[in-house]
Image (spheres, rainbow, N blue to C red):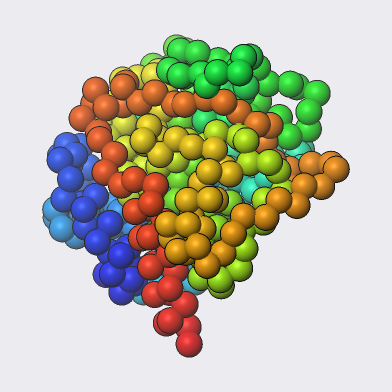
Length: 362
């Protein structure tokens, strides 16, 4: 099974596979997913594979990865299936494209990106080039093979920050301020440029490109070694250790359970309008980092742990600037997508999934 026996993950994959998505778009098709060893990419491949099995779609799925050995560890026996193929390639290498050019891809989901804040600080040039060069090469490929659909996985960080003390309710048509002189801006600035590149390919070549602006995404199916804030909070619960924040936790987060995010991307691919961006978030999960940490300590860990502030003088961890924005999702929900998992349930399901994985290693 696609969830490797993990009952929480498999339940999520089954729900996606049986959702009211126009699956005829995938029948007899070939799908390419880049970034297929990242959180979103891995679970896109798993969900497509589950959908392929349950709905009998005769789909062929290509997972583009930089490290074949890492991919084999993640996917395991799933790679024995005839409908899944690994392609090992570096998006910014000179040799990129040789293996891909012989395949007729119907749908391309470009999820490859640097997602670790510390890498954005330590290797800003590589972060930018992975975004810009990688996206251009995927768009060129989509144009070359005349792909039916191209979905670019963007981020809520493209919005930057908004002036004022009040929380900004942000639709896809609004943009805040990003300081180009801050090194950490490399991620958000390059995401903005990649979005515009997608629009350029639509305008000049008629490419049917759609953009998914993801909020912070987590849930059952997170990968071993994940160290973003949600994984740190979950591990604090499992290890009965206090949650240590290196900021005051004032930044307001927009979150979405992984199952809901994957379903949203597939809905955008099938039903989204060309040259349009869609916010992917659960509006009910909007909260500050501090309040989320407090909720985890009190409602998930039953007050057995607490929140501790340990704030360094400089931003050595590469955290994004504090933001006060709430993503509006009316545009995506107009396509028929509705989030189904709240913040507390998301943590409970993620923690149960992690516990199951850890028990298998004993």
